[in-house]
Length: 495
Ligand SMILES: [Zn+2]
Image (cartoon, rainbow, N blue to C red):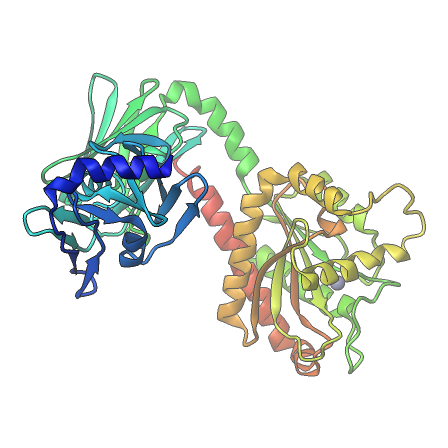
């Protein structure tokens, strides 16, 4: 099969006998020059895909048996098969005038046709100039990256990720009576494959885009009428945010209801361990249960002093509370955030720093060890029969799924806590991690478990013994809660 195809090619082209020189690659981004390998004796210039991958510093996947190569370009996949007259880019088929040729395990494509397609789709920064036999790579002009549509109780929000701060007059929007809402960004440029893959929801039924002479026009086909629209560019994130307000009459009642659900009016603070369960004990005799109760009370005091949220403590004294009772209490009190505070322990006395956990199947051995230690608290519970399903890997997945609707929020709360602690205290940030904790299972609200530091590290134990350090931790967690609360309530604020 291979031989036959190759012979036809030879017979067909041999008499033309054009000696081909390689394509000159002019990279204007890195200011370098290179050469791209081509086939000899072809009527049009055929370039090598393997060599192209090298030139573009990207990777390929090869299936030699099926004579296929997949070229990875950013998030895009370009599939090339020898002997066929088409290429497949992200599952869309494009026709090329002559078939791809395989020579010594490398596939060659007609250069001009290939780059016409790539330029239009996934490689707008690369052009092939036929008359100079040159491949020119220019800095990409894309400054608009993606579109995200969010449905809210009172309307729909469209978020457009951009790289550039546009002037106010460069962005305009209007609602056409044909049902399309248009946003025009002067000087805007985007890769249509990134824009059009956005999921539509809420009022937005369809998204379309046009790269115009002076900029970019995005068009959104609306499912129903809107009361009004607003847009602005966030100076910090550079995101263009469009709000399409649903007609008021329809949404007023719903807004009220959702607002009540969303409002973070109750925060549950859970001091780990307590009573007969001391938790980790440091070299100087510091007990985890004492340290974390103090920190939790400090967080609570800051909240009560400066906000009107209700603070619920799962324990406010040195008593033993079973793990299952802690989340039960949080749910019964209608908590909107659950934060469990602990201090860490490790056989390695050098281990130090703070980390925040999400309830998810444990990924690393360290995370699993931390969960195992914290879960060990159930050994102090006298009547635990049937209270805990064993947190096997499957059990952890089920528990995680049950609260997946809070997962995104738990993630941002955890990130916020780490972020504030990084600013406030001088210790190592060990990041946001995940593991299976009984104390988080079943919480019907965003929930995280914070390990403030290692009591098994004598230096960190010393720090944790000081009021100043504990107050700093409390202030950081307090600020994280406030930031989280703000960001979650922001959308509803204008309802
Ligand atoms: Zn603990």
